[in-house]
Image 1 (cartoon, rainbow, N blue to C red):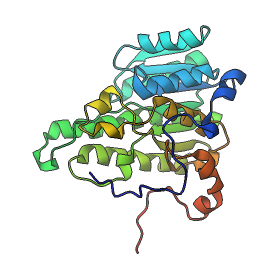
Image 2 (cartoon, rainbow, N blue to C red):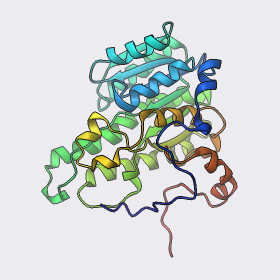
Image 3 (cartoon, rainbow, N blue to C red):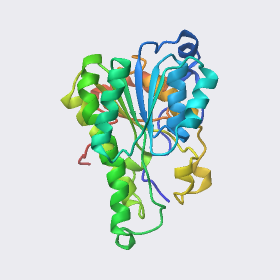
Length: 286
């Protein structure tokens, strides 16, 4: 399967935590104390570890998922016994519920600083679009697009007040072209553009779309992708999320970032990236 993407970007790549995103200082210094972070899809996998990292860095965390969040709460409490945690059972496609969750988070914690839109879904790869069930195809698009927007929309007024962040967990599939994954690829492409439009419409809010890497999760295990694709840890994505909300990389808003890329190397390319408006969705003539 070809992704039609340069396999050798001009930066080092990683599969786990590396120096530029090492969270040790954030953990020991509790650098996110007084910050409020809302994470969707936090019951397992990448969302669970992102929530853990922010809690270990001192943040108050609000967690949403359709399934039980007990495991995530226990994991956080084991590392941070005094962590402040709110949990909400919610389907990201229920926009009314999403708005209720956001307002409850702000009511309980006083403000919102970071939204991590992580929840998503996928069908197994392998079917051409003409062979897929239309409702199953649309469910992926609806979950991955409306599921992000339903939290972004009510969060923006609060994030504008705190000059906060929106991190959208997308996929390399959003910039790839290959057959038999149209529902997933279209939805992930759309939310990359959504991050760009958030920053355009709300200049005080930083928005970044992140490919979390090839992480073996319950969802990805059923994707039909080769097992050798899944070589990255969820900690890689979580460390990247911390780094991107630390203030150091605010200039990357509203761009696309692959968590496997070395952010230290990306930083060295800052002038060229900004000058060429790189890492942005666009069409170009040859």
